[in-house]
Figure 1: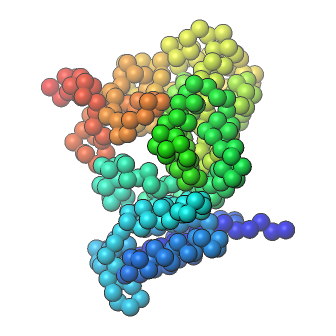
Figure 2: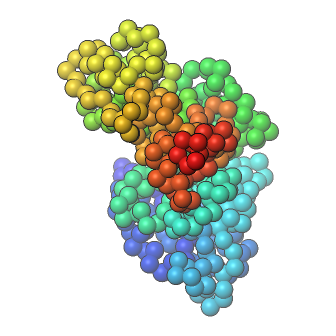
Figure 3: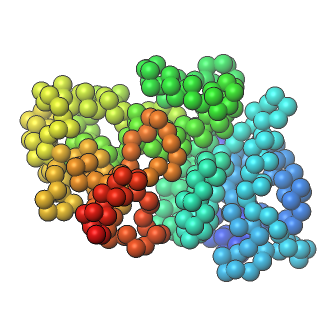
Amino acid sequence: MPKKAIKYLCLDDERDIESACRRLQSANHLKIELVRPKSDWSQQVELIDNSLRSGDFDGLLIDFRLDETHHGTSSEDSDGKKVRYTAESLITELRRRSVEGGGDGSYPIVLWSTAAFLKGFYELNPAYSVAYDDIWDKASLPNRHGEYATKLIGLRTGYSEIAKRLATDSADITSLLRTEPTSVIKDLQQNLNKKTRGKPHTFQYALFITHDILEVNGPLIDSNLLHAYLGVSSLTSAQRDKIFNILGKDAIYNGVFADTFQRFWRDKIINRLESATGAFSWLSLAAEERVGLLMKAVKGIRLAPAAPLSAGYSTDYDCVCAITGRPLSRRNAFRLAELRTLSWKEAEYASGVAYRRNFNDLSKSRPLDGDDYERFCEHFIN
């Protein structure tokens, strides 16, 4: 029996958006149906809500500036009436309606817009971004349509898994992440329960897991931080497989949304690196030492240590430069100010050299933490 295609409703006022939708549809088992915004807000809410409740669609893809095209002209509906609302007001009401009356008809919602607007609005107002499952820059679509199509499918799959577990009263952070109920995992569940008064819906589980766990480095880490811990700049798939034959496949995240987020369990990585190599304190070692120990422990692997970001920088890498994405030691790093405070989240850092390069371009630099800002100015400005 043929696999049913995942189908998204797309609400967008741009006249050239059809080609973008076709690119997304080029992926297997994905369909996009484009509709233009209506001038009447209430009518628009009803149309989307009824479409998603009917089961004909699996999710929503929505433009932010429904009232204005990227050329700066006002948007009008098919009757020539102006559209006077943006996605924000729609999403708040749609999320509410999806769970009203004791039911749970949650579905993934992805926002896409222009990079200039996203940077100017959502980076300054991060609380607004967590209402969406993901936010995309339209200009990046031609080079990333395959990745984005996979993400749309993966989001729907994840939502379905969460909904099934909730229906059988078996949903919790431990089971959804497919891990052990450690103290950190229990803290995550308590944090979610506090936010949702102890009864999270599917979309609340989904948004919490993606934004507060998978998109940040904490109990789970991304590939860049994994590389920094290993002391390398990158890994081929063959090299990674060999390393995880030693570290154990369970150190790779395989919980909900694993199809779209490649993540690794931090503590398992560190503990097993030390166990496999005999190292006492792995992160205190220089990259050259780490790579040497790995090549002894992992049969048939050849690795090269990651070069430091700048001459004189230490190679006892324990973080990643947020500007370059390259391995960095906190000895040479400056801590970035937190946009959202999460107790389990690793701090983010930038190298002084990279931050200095972007210091006068506010569009490329985040504020530094207060004490680190003073330290940075002493080294690079004064």
